[in-house]
Figure 1 (cartoon, helix red, strand yellow):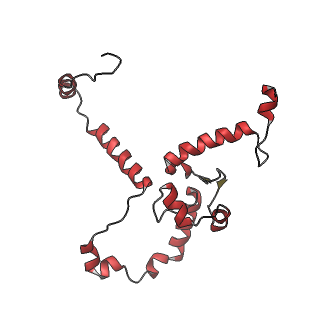
Figure 2 (cartoon, one colour):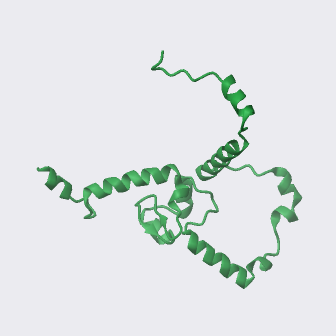
Figure 3 (cartoon, one colour):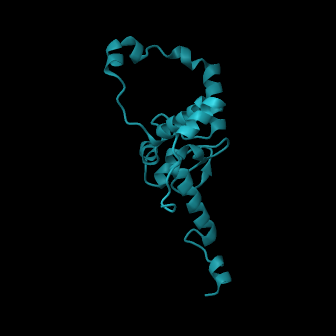
Length: 166
């Protein structure tokens, strides 16, 4: 088969095979950092790569999973809404207008002090680990000394030894 003919081949869904390869590479990058899948006007499904305003239970059912399974599989926080940022803001505005916060009668952590003493032992999701790592890295960059103090520290550190130099 000629190279031009090979590029025109389609996958099972009828899309060009080259495009699906790129989509797969993009999905791998999004799966490594799932926070990037949530954008202003769309959220990318990390199963199929479709851009949607909201990942509904109906869409997730087409992949044979639930929202809880999806969040744990791809490392989202348990309470992360599976919708684009614009839709989240819209829902927040509606909740504020409707006064939903005033309808909350009891917060268990405040009403029952023993819950606070127990502590919050839970599993840390990939999303939370990545966010904490980014915050630490930003903190390091901001705390780096400048001027003479930095030069002394840099001069005191020995240069790294690479395998190629040995």
